[in-house]
Image 1: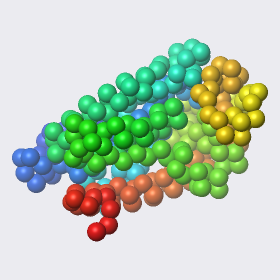
Image 2: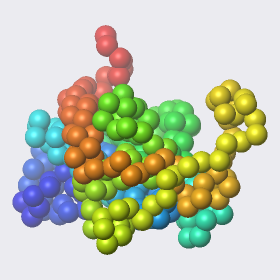
Image 3: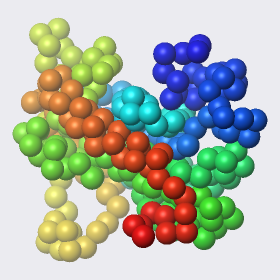
Image 4: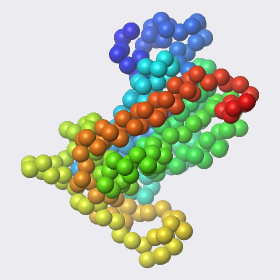
Length: 273
């Protein structure tokens, strides 16, 4: 093998695939994970690529865990752009419209099905990437044999976040800062005394009770909602908290990927007989 991470497609060679496959038409993997990030500001202390860094870190850990369990799971290169129309009022935010994301997912799914990989997981690390509708769009689309799953880890694992963090955040707060401190501390901006260069991540309320209570939803223009794009106080973040949370994600999603890889694609999939 040419890599210590055989689950990572970007580090895998055609020779690696041929060496471990069961024949000419075996792609060498049973499940593909597609990470989705974004390029947008994260307060004054986290990099524009925070969501993409998180997507690859979490994807790497969960695929590694599944690989240790014997599952042939591929982590594809991350999509570093996402839907971030609400931050377009802030400099150098780079946006893809939801319909563009649909086209990207459709093309990647078609490519994977062409190579006989039909169990596909969308690993989303950006809140603006609302991908559930894409699953509905493609469930009976041009490649109905593809079986798509969606992981919005920051939404789905709120129970663990609320246990670990003082203030589980919306954007660039304690949770995301802890993850970056645990994985890429050199990218977290700090003053000479070690304090984060971030503000407190306060958000401005709307004038409508229905919106504040969650009875009515809007898309929030970030340049009006926040001071420096942070929505959540990051100052209680620690690398230890980030590592604890990453371990939860690795365990939960690693077990899921192993089960998915082992599951037969029969007419009842994904349900029990």
